[in-house]
Length: 192
Image 1 (tube, rainbow, N blue to C red):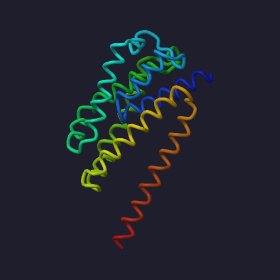
Image 2: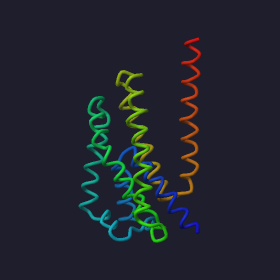
Image 3: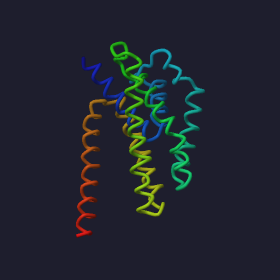
Image 4: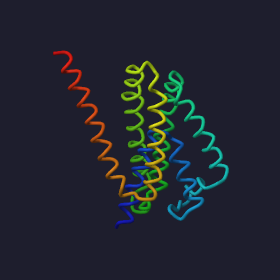
């Protein structure tokens, strides 16, 4: 039972990470599956372990990291990633859920798609435009770098210690709610 729970928690964590950067969690899973026993990928997901896949993902990680740091290019990148990030989340959820035999594959794909798609939407429609307006684009590279670091940490922890995903998710929700509340109070306080 704990293996099922950890598989699902890890799958959710990887999907969250894919919503920020599609290729970082895919590369993390590929490398961990190739070089460790921490994650075992069943067919057809074991294709992520091939050197070709790892090489292509490495190049895509670099392209997305660079594109996401440039103020206008990041918006084009987010538009393109609207289809890629949810797909990556779906693949990661289905590939990493150790309980894949107990959860229908289509349900796993849908869960990953919804989780990554929601994170991507929050990032590209709400958070990023607010940062760009508030900082005149100067904050974009900083926020993007923090997102990439968060994506790496969440991806690794999702595989290594999936139960931490519950803590990370609740802390992230609390942090976002606190920031929103402070901004709301500050804005409300300034208008009256």
